[in-house]
Length: 112
Length: 115
Image (cartoon, rainbow over the protein chains, first blue to last red):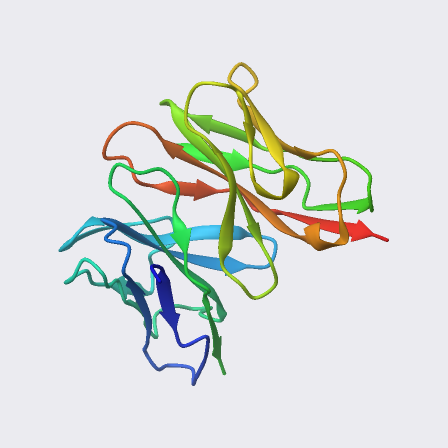
C-alpha cells in the first residue's frame, strides 16, 4: 500500500533532549512537509522540501531542523532550543505538479 | 503571501440538519483550495478540492463547497449531517503557480453533531 508512515505514534522525552521524528513516503512525491498542531491553532508549517537536498523554513522553524537526503524520507529533529515542543506533529507529501497533500497519522510528542 | 481564515472555531449542529463551515482566503496569485477532515488523534483526510473550472465541487461523505473568487471564499456545506461527521475540519490554500508548493491551513472548525 502506498502512503506516508510516521513513527513512532507516541514519543516521550525529557526536557533538554533532542528528538527525531521519522517520516517515510512511498508515493514517489517530490514535496514533503512538516506541520505542528496545537489545540485552537490549526496546522502551522515548520519546514517543507520541494526536492531532494533542498528545504525551506516555514512559519515556525525556530528550534527545529530537517534533512532531505532521500526522496522518500524527511526526518524532523526537535532540538532543545524549541521552547514548547509538546505537540502533535504531522508529516505530509505532494506530487511536484500535483495538488493536494497526503498526510501521515501523526506523532504525538510529550516533553516532560 | 497567502492566508486562510476560518471564522468559526466550533459549530454545533443537530443530526440531520444542514451545516455550513466558512472559509475565507487571501493570496496574491491564483489558488488551489482544499477542505480536509481530521478525526481524533489521526492525520488529515482530503474531503474535496477546487483547482479550476466549475465553482461548485463535490467531495466525499456528501460534502460540497463553492468557490467564490469575488468574495475570496470557499465555504463547505452538507445538507444533512450525521453523528459520524463529528470531527475537525480544515480549509487550506496553495498557490497554483508552478513551483509554489507551500500549503497554508486555517485554524480549523470543530463540528459537533447533537443527536
